[in-house]
Structure formats: C-alpha cells, structure tokens
Image 1 (tube, one colour):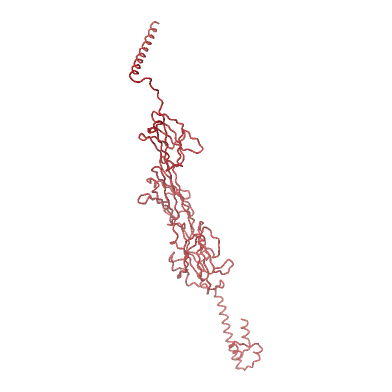
Image 2 (tube, rainbow, N blue to C red):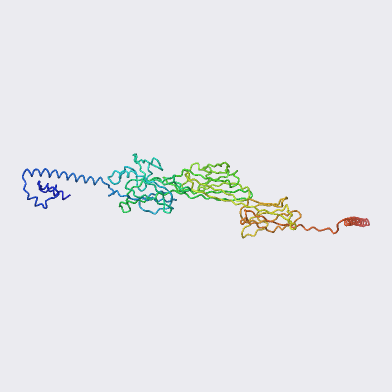
Length: 516
C-alpha cells in the first residue's frame, strides 16, 4: 500500500502511464523528473492522478471491508475432514457430547448402534459471517440443544430461530464393537446434525434412552485454539442393569414360594426421562397362582409403593403377571424397585419362572429363578418278612443342621405316617437341604428306638426325592406252656383249686375271729 501511495505522488506523464499499462514502469524517480511536460500534459496527468488515487482508495476500502466481513474465527479452507462418533454407555446419565476434541469416554463401548449424518443446507462456514451467525443461535456448541427436527429418526428439515433449513443426508455408519466408533470421512466444512436411530437398536439392548440428535460444526477449534478438521463427539446412552430375581420357600408345609424381583433404574437427565416402567413374569411353571395378585408388594427405595402400581394376571392361562407403574414419571432416577409375590407348589420338583423388565418400552433384561422342592418317603417293613409292609408308623422330620447333633427333641418341620395299604408315607414341598427323621410311634405289635436318627439328604437326591426303608421288629410276648385240650383241662383244674383254696383261707380266718 505504501508503494501505491508513492506512485501516486510521482510526477506522471503520458509515457509513464504507458509504462504502467505495459507493466514496465520507469526504473527510477529521476527518469520521471527529467521528462519534459507541457501545461496541457500537466493538467491531464493531474486528472488521471486524481482518478487513479480514487480507484486505489476505493480498492483499499473494499479490501478493508472484505477483511471485516470475512470469517472472524480465522482462516477456514474448504478442506474435507472427519467426524468421529464414539458410543458409550452412560451409567451416570449425563449426556456429554464433548467439545470436538479427544476425551476419555466413560462407560462401556457400545457396538452395532447406527448413526446418520445430515448437513444443514444453506449454512456457509467458509465465506462470511452469515453461517456463523446461525451457529451462534444454537447456544453453546459444546452442549447443544436438541435440534427441532420434523422427524427424530429420519429428518428432512430443522428449525433454527424460527427458520426452516433443509437437511441433506450425508452418510450412515454403525458403531464398531469394542471401540464404539462410527467414523464419517470426507466431510466438508459446514453445520451438521448427528442422529441416532432408535428403531435400529440391536435386540435385547440395554439402551433405554438413545442420545438426542445434536449439532456439530466442521471444522472445530482444537485445544490450542487452532482450526481442526477432525471432530470427536461422545454421545452417551442411558443404560440400565438387568433385573435380579430370587425364590424362597419359607414354609414347606404350605408349599408357598415367595418370588422377589429387583430392578435398579438408570439415571436420567433433562434430555432423557423415564416415561414407562413394568415387570412381566411368566408364572406358568411356578405353581398355583390363585393367590398371587393379592400377595403382590412393591417397594421403591425401600418404601411401600404397592398402590402406585397396577397388577394383573394376563394370558390365556391367567399366569402372566404384569406389574406396571401408574405414573412412571414419579419414579426416582437411579432408584430401586423391588416386587414380591407368591405362588403355591403343587408338590415336589423344580419350579421356575422368568421375569422381563421394560423401561420406556425397551426390554432391559431377563432374569430366571428356580425353587426346588423335595420329597422324603418312608417305607416301613417287617424286619423278618420283607414283603410285609407296616402301617401306622409315625416320624418327626427335622432339619439336619451341619455341626449340630440332632436329637429326638428337635423342632419338627413336618411329620410322616405310613399308610395301611402300602406301608409308605411321604412329606413333600420341602426345601432342598439335609433332614433327619425320628420315629415317634411304631406299628401295633412292633418295637422302635425313639433315639435312632434317620438321615435324608435332599441336596444329593435324584429328582429331589429320598426314600428311606426302615424295618421294625415284633414285640416279644411270653408263650403259653401247654396248648390243646390237655392244657385247657389242667388250667381248669388249677382254677378250681385256686377257688377252693381261697374259700378255705376265708373260713379259717372267720373261725379265729369268732373264738376271740
């Protein structure tokens, strides 16, 4: 610019102008000065000089204006770059998109999650300020608000500050297993929207709330304030742990099985909220469900909230239990829901059921629980005649605790009495553990030892059944010395003699009293 100004103040001539036009200016100021000029020429030169000055002045102002209306963020070139989308689970619930720079992502990497990249048409980030003015209306680019899309899964329009912009689909990528990375390459500068497709989430996914669509610009400022054509973003999913389930038989005598299912809720934030929650339990293999509905109890963070849930037995067989929160929005973020209910065993064997939990209509997991119930059978036989089954034998059944010597005074969990027909008796619906039996009554005409323990270990039993064969010995009865007719005659004579003897003793005693 200084050179231009000095030229303007040089004494110009027509020859000089010709040199300038020709691109061959005089070699020195002295050459200009030595040139002869006339008054007419001086006037022409003065006019031309004024015109050239005006042109250069305009050029200078134009350049200044160009500089002030250019990209204030720095020089941006139309260079293709890369957008890296890292998909991770987010147990903490905070959705962090990042500032475009590399970061350490929390949670497990999630594979097989699709993302689609859309470009916002009409937003130029290379030439001028207009495009950056649009970006400025999105609020803080590091924590963008959800774009106002016409469709959350396959958008075609986005509204920014009341103005609609057309979206151009650039590409679709699926995150890789192990890294959770979906990489978009050859992406030119501009304003983009990244959309996670909920419809394409893998079956059985623990993802209960997908990341909301978000804006991203390319290029972005790196940690040093320079333009970077590689952007790294970390949209984290809200995930939920799987449910837990257990079974307990509190009283074998009544065969009641108590089922417990627990679900820890994920932590939600303002962009992802809990809208629906329910348990679904198939009780077809869990026993009788006649009293199940009445037994349902639900706690939330340890407080009884049974009234806040709907309960029903559905399905053709009426054995499909559904427990649904009436107002899921009232459930605490990160809270714990525990539901208990009962069924009744019909006998011994293995009882089972599986529960599903759903959060925002997404199946977050499946849990199985088993209730094994056993049976102890006693066969009572004559010790001499093994074909003779005995009825009327009674046994007390106690738990055989390891390290504890059980005696006949142990607390009974049930009793067994042998039947008349087969000489057998049973006790079922027992927990799978070790038991000990004590005989409390023997069949008529037989002896028993009340202190003898009989062990029954259901933990090692086949088909949860233990059969004990226990023998009894007949009672020893004194035998008569003689049998038959002779024996009967002697007994008769002996009886008469005893009567006569008694009569004689009576008479002697009476005579002595009279003599006194």
